[in-house]
Amino acid sequence: MSSIEKAKILLKEKNATLVAVKGDEEYISHDRGVAPILNIIDNNPVLLNGASVADKVIGKAAAMLLAKYGVCEIHAVLISEKALDYLKTKPIKVTYDSEVDCIINRDKTDMCPMEKSVLFTDDENEAEALIRKTREKLLKK
Image (cartoon, rainbow, N blue to C red):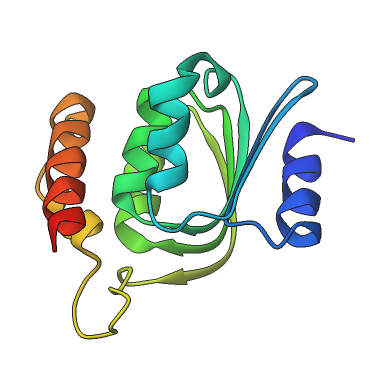
């Protein structure tokens, strides 16, 4: 079984939000938003390099972080048009179940603040800084 197939199965079986698989190593998260990706980046960034990731929701912010840290394959249950456009410029195999114009926030009143934070950049370093700044602001609320 391929790593992406394993990740997709684990995502569903464990009712997870994100699963990363690299060889025998697995990371399973139930956290929301970009938190699982930032957790991997902060604690074990080499896991993402060459990994296959299955995620419930991929917006442009998540896409940029995954690309920056070297993910080779992504499966999204739901992906935004901006994320897909961005990932098309990268050597990453992408599959998805559904595509939407944009990811919406949890209140369903506006665009996801993470996706909004990276809307006008394609620079992955700038994007990570913007994502972390936005996350910090949201955590203070």
